Image (cartoon, rainbow, N blue to C red; front, side, top):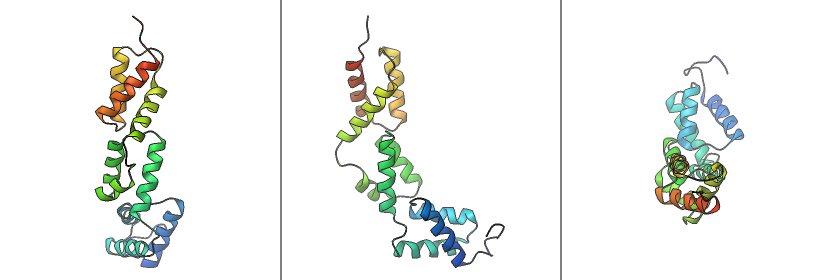
Length: 160
């Protein structure tokens, strides 16, 4: 199938490519459609194939989002970053909200774990500022970052 142009790829070939992608990992509907078009499928054919796969429940935004949130949480990313990444992949805010953990406790724990990993010895003013920026860049809210900093400061007090 290499070397074929968009007008050469049939719907069956595009479906075969899509199923091959789906055997490797989960995809969101929009992400798979974009990937097929990038691969050389005509937009109409890509849309039809993805629609058929969604009807067969082989591609699902809900399933993809749940997997994505679990994976990113395991790697200690915050809710703001995860939400932004999913938006860029074409996932609606309603689907994202359903997949996110209901309480704040999981996010406070994740932020504290990340801060604990990154903390090296005493936590002075400059170290606290650097750790705060790191937490915010990972997608944690101001409140979550401050709770994590308080947790780490209690475990690694600065000496005067």
